[in-house]
Length: 96
Figure 1 (cartoon, rainbow, N blue to C red):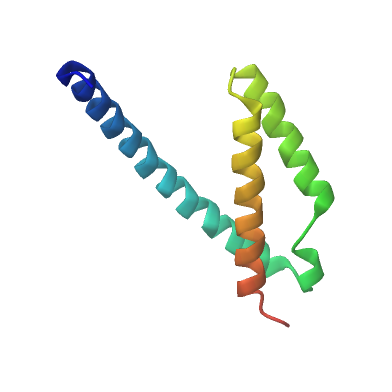
Figure 2: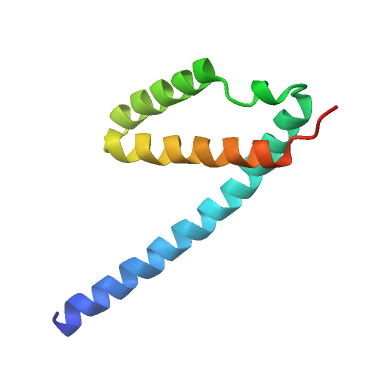
């Protein structure tokens, strides 16, 4: 790789790191909201809401198309994020 390309690559990586930092703040905020949602759930079976998941994924697909973002990428990200938060909710569910 030429020194010029390596320099450009490093600058792009710095920008990606800044985006990652912003994403982490968003995940922190999302986690706070998920905690509030979880506190409202009375039964563990309420954690997985397939109808809600389908609505979310359809909404993200429409927005991705409108923003010209690869829908496979956004679907993969949201599907895995939802799975991660389902796991989080199951680990943090307190029986009432």
